[in-house]
Every structure is written in C-alpha cells, then in structure tokens.
Image 1 (cartoon, protein in one colour):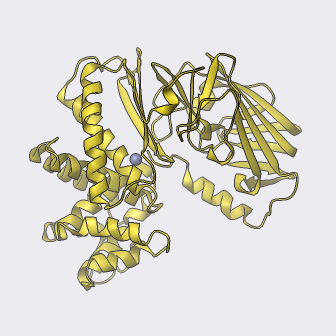
Image 2: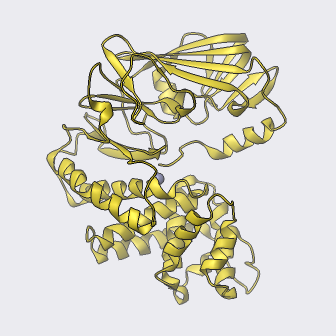
Image 3: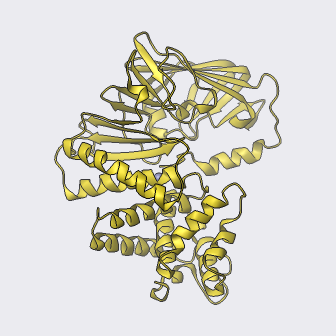
Length: 424
Ligand SMILES: [Zn+2]
C-alpha cells in the first residue's frame, strides 16, 4: 500500500550518500527479459561494484524465487555480495507465483490477458563501491524490458505495446506483458474476467462511484484517468487480497481458493481495500508520513463507505472503537510518530483521524484540502494542523502530543490520554 519501500533504511542510505556525487561511469542498466515462466534480469554497471542491496524488495520473494547466476546472497540484508568487484550480474526469477506480499507490491499479478510485472523490485536501493554504500539516486539508471517473441510489453501510461520498451525513470511502476497485438494497453480499467462474479460486479459498479466521491472530496481531478488492474489467481493458497497505488496505477491482486463464494467478511474486505486504494490516488502524494497517508486512507475508506451506504453505522462504530483501543494499547507513553512498526502507524493514524473528526466533522477534510493546497510549499504538517485546529491551544497541544510527543508536558498530557472521551 502506497510506497512499500522500507523508508527508514532508504533514508539512512540517503544520509550516508549525500556527500557522494555522481561521477561519469556511475551507470546502472537494468535489462528485464520476461518469458512465460522466468524473468531474466541483468544488472550492468558502468564501473565494478562489490555488492548490491535490495532493501525495498520483499524478502521472501528474493529468498524463494531469485536464483543468482553470479554472486552469493546474504539473505539477512537482501544483499548480493561478490567475491571480487563485478560489472555484470544476472539472476533468473520464477514468475509463476503472484502471491500477496504484505506491505510490498506484488511482484507479478496475473490476469486473464497477461501479467503485470512490478519493475521497482529490480531497482537496487544501494550499491557498494570501494567499500562505501551509495544510494541508487547517485547513479544514472536505465531500465529496459525485452520480452520474448510473441509478447509485448506495455506501460499503462498510454504507450502502445512494443517489442522493446525503454522505461528510464518510470521503473517504479507495473509494466504489462501481454500477447502481441493485444488491445490491453489501451484500456484504463482491467478487471480480470476470471474474478468471481460477485467480486467482478462489486468492483465494476463501485469503482466509478468511489473515483467520483474522492474527486469531489479532494476538490480536484487527477492529472489523467488512473490505470486500474485487478488480477485474480485461484490457487490453493490462503485467501488473500492486497493492492497498491503507484504512479497513477491502482493494482489489486486477489489470490487463494476462498473467493468463489461471497461472505459478509470477504465483501467487506474487498470493498474496504478498494476504497483505501482509490483514496491513495489522491492522498498518497500529499505527504510522506505513514500515519498520515496509510492511516488517512484507512480512515477515508471507512468514512466513504459509510457515506455511500456501503457499510452500516454499526460496522463503522465497531471499527472506530476497535482501532482507537488498539492504538491506546500500542502507544502507552509514546506518540504516534515514535511507534516502531509500520502497521502500528496505520492503526494510530486512523485513530488520529477519528479523534480529529470528533472535534469537528469538517476538520479532517480541511486538513486534506490544506495538504493539497500547500503540497508544493513543504509547509509542516504541524503548521497545517494549527490552522485546522483554529488556534485552540488545548487542541493544538493535544494533537502535537499525540503525533510528535511535543508539548506533552503541558498541561500534564500523555499521548494515550488524548483519546479520552472528552475529545470525542
Ligand atoms: Zn495504503
């Protein structure tokens, strides 16, 4: 969901690499050659490297599916470490699995007319040269996809299918591998026709409703219509669903053997995920904090589904009080930004929005509109929050205490206490 990279790790590398400037020869070419069952990946360096780190690629995916042709994996760090500096590295990757990897973009999403490949997984986070780890941003990177004959690759940016596709700076998105001559690339919404009927009908009916809802909520249209792909793979795997939004693409992957028959639980899971992902088309580019983006999307999903009559007030209330209780238990004396697990940010971020809305029903929307308005001016969330809370010192104190631990000492406030009923 949203950016699945392990931001903390990336930030550390960014920090370490700020003093290292790109030099001629600091080039990385990535060549992907997909066929039916294997993806061949080649990393070609402008100058020799000692190791490559893939910290924003799912660990289990690398561990189970990648077979290095040259090099040795250190599975702890998802590093490819080489005995001697190398300029060319190759790996074969099995593509039959399109399992849902929690917290990461699904590497391969199968749908009836082809397969979507998440290219971002082959982009390293850092490279080690002369004993020093350097962030990938200090390299000139070039990514190219070359499919086997009879197949075409298409980027859902509207490009026509081609035999070879040079994607350059668009590598953090999905590319589609389809039959040559297929019209798939011209479509903006691809719902796998093998989806169970109830799920197909649900998504087909509700996607435009949700897009319209958020367009009005955020008072803005998207730069271009989103590309939406929902893949389905019936398999013996656990019944799971996951999705993500990246670069105007919304991809949902449905796998497992339990989807053919609907149930209130599956219905709720499917519509909640869709609402969460559609909200990301608007909210994901407004800030970088997980509590805000992911917690915000969870909150927006609940609000939207309630407004559209897709969930009952009872379900909404149950979710609201569950999330707040979970967050209270997580926080103790800590504040939201300090929580260590990413998933905890989701829970407490969502709870924060319930709290904010309890103060005044229009405050949440006001915050999103301000975030949208000031997104290019890098104004601090803290400042925007002060605007939204209308300079009420007690409320500003409470929100700063809850989010950042600032001002908790006055007036004797602890983060978890912010959720006390007096603020509902
Ligand atoms: Zn998300």
